[in-house]
Image 1 (tube, one colour):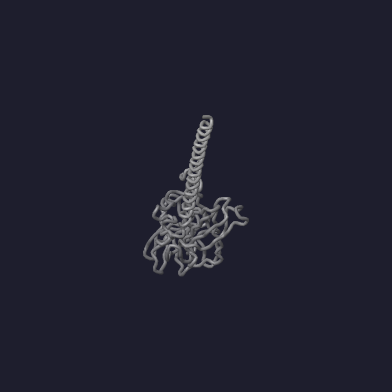
Image 2 (cartoon, rainbow, N blue to C red):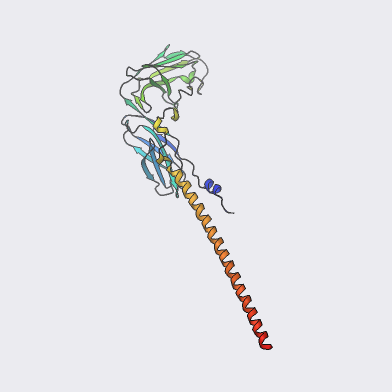
Length: 295
């Protein structure tokens, strides 16, 4: 059954890759980090984009056998902090870009102070407020709980921000640090750790609703992306255009071949009809000649 253009577009679309960072997306100044990009098993080439521009290229080794590659940043600096995406090639097609990965550098400039009220030891059900203070001119602060894969909470304030949790449960106990932010991807040194002890109540390892910040404060890529990061560079989306052009070109070639075959068949039919007509006239001529001789 012939493939329509819609079928070709469906069959030739590659799934977008997955991107992540090890050991974390929050990296201290001067430390190394590895960015992983995972595509499909037949991928032969990977590209890494930084702030919308092509940054690095890696090929699968052996080609088409590895479904992921790594891009190493040996020393994290403010120049390598930012938003990353990746894409991969399979055959002649390129995938769409991955979701964004925001790499944050810490250990820049000053160090904030972190305190907790009413104290570091509270009873389950009470209200607890963390205060993060930084003298340097900044209005954005992050609170991070250590030892688990929770997202940093973000708050705004003039040299100080408040992080309230109410009511607290045993799920809130742990060690906290805070950061001041100078832009979306450059953070201060971490504060000294503050350990919160919560007593009473039943053991609950799940996160309570109050520990999950509201959508305006949660750490999500679209909330910490710079404006230029959201303006997709033309180079980043050239692969999609290239894939569509290749598919359309293949479709046009297929149509041209069908037209050529149809024209050739029509020409052969006309040639055959001409030959039959010539043979008919020759037969009539021979018949008339024989009749004339008989007379």
